[in-house]
Length: 335
Image 1 (cartoon, rainbow, N blue to C red):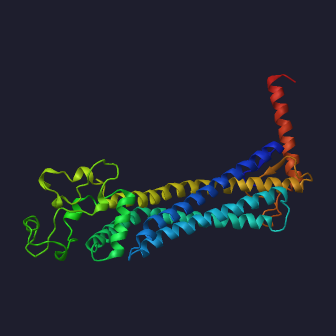
Image 2: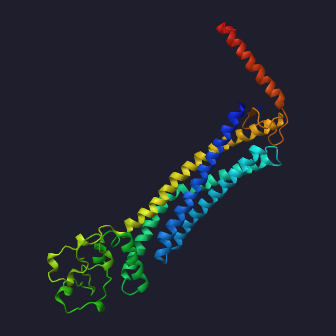
């Protein structure tokens, strides 16, 4: 007894095959999107900033990159497999190949669902790590040339300043005593009891590029520092928010794409079984392109030989259809 036995006409079979290919192509597109998102975020965050603690970022986004590549390759093979069984359904091991491909597809979705469940916690963890890294880099701004270049490049490229705002530079001990004129009364005003000096000065890279006028990133060097507003000429957004936009956008988008991938996998599993069995049964009935029944599981699947054969199934279906037409005509008295 076949499970979900459906009779497909010639046109219906072709239409069904197109639907199967379109669903697989949609999965292929999702895989390509995941691959590109992982690559872009990995280069935009982990590679360019060169964090000492970059291992976590590489683990997250390289995993996403390889997963996207796996999804892409899996669906690319699926397109080839569907083309083969539609034109050569009686080929050796064709049923087993489709089964293994479907099984690998469910494994792919299971891995994706696990990744989706940890995306939100991973985003929170990466946010904490980013804050710690940025704070460490700000403290070493003047003592580490490599860090100075990275932070300047990041603040100019992302048009940001500090961690949450420019105030973070004012609260961080990045201008060491040896770089300041300690006999200046303006500098002494910002000296702490422990000897640290934290004046309201930020690096030049915090300056906004869209302001037509001077940038007050160092108001202590201006004639009247009290009369000049530094915030109007500085980037108002913190760099953590700018970086979280990229990181969280990638991780949250991954959850949505994997959800779509799950739906597509269930859909392609059902449709490909109908498509393959209809193509194979058409060959068994003697005409590769004729109408034929398709099912999820039935005779000829994995050595199943019990139950009626295809000719008997087709004969019973025709007799049932004729009886229904006769009953309809008798009821309507139109024959």
